[in-house]
Length: 358
Image 1 (cartoon, one colour):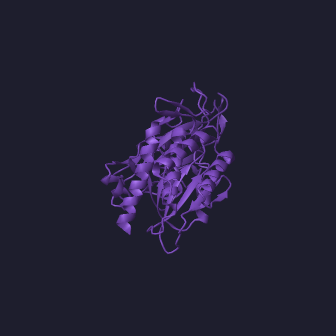
Image 2: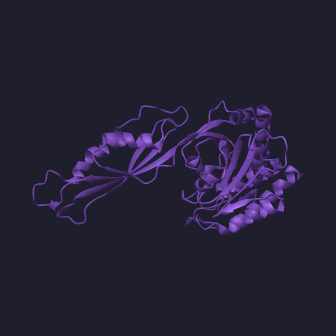
Image 3: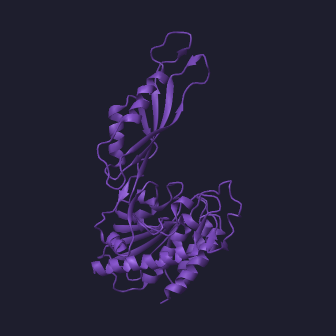
């Protein structure tokens, strides 16, 4: 079996190759090949659909529960503030620079190394499945959500996103609504008591002031924000409609269906959700994975940012090397020692969890 030190060096080399291979969402075919090669070099059979690549532990037993390890290999497009070449892996002063280094390449290669470490173990109390997924940044239809049908029922998951290896035990969901407030079109010179722009005022006020009752201990309240308003084409015509866009960040006390039903009960307008599957997610602090992390000095918190946790129905923990504030930033980087620590902590947390449950 390879040493942790060898796996770590190979993981860092893989991350450098991933950085230098463009993989915008839906265009990850070349990084998928790099991940295939990683599995092949470690003598691990894998499966691939679209640009998702996954593998099961060697001694998979359908009578055991299954734990998912997941991170993504797609990236956003580089922003205009870059002074480095975003597709060049540059190591300087202990930092590895490059697009996707922090979000979420460091997490991905650390989880791949962790999976290889446990792959041949005959006596694991859990099955392991490692999924390197696509289209996370775009919440696309061919990402992790499309792989789930090929997997056994999942008992729990670790989703690799940059958390400074602290324990994100809950994550807010997202519900985006297109709201159409109706009225009557007319010439602006005529009296019109049914102006949709005026009709939109109480609707906007409701979104501003309404409070959902259930407040999460970790994530706080549900937050609704009107982010776009559009109506009318010219100064002398009252339009027939006023369009609003509402961004709703959902806590783990509600699912998106409940939020939508509440909005429809209170708002006199046409309500169209853009999607319903980006639900909030959480894992109890009492869960063995979380307790294993706490015992190693990790702290728990609630994450406001969205990840592939949103498509999972099982308990899931967001955990990974790197820092979320660096994600999508110019000259994105991860510290080399964060990857080294990440692999060691992933292995220790899982080892301690397996001891608890065996």
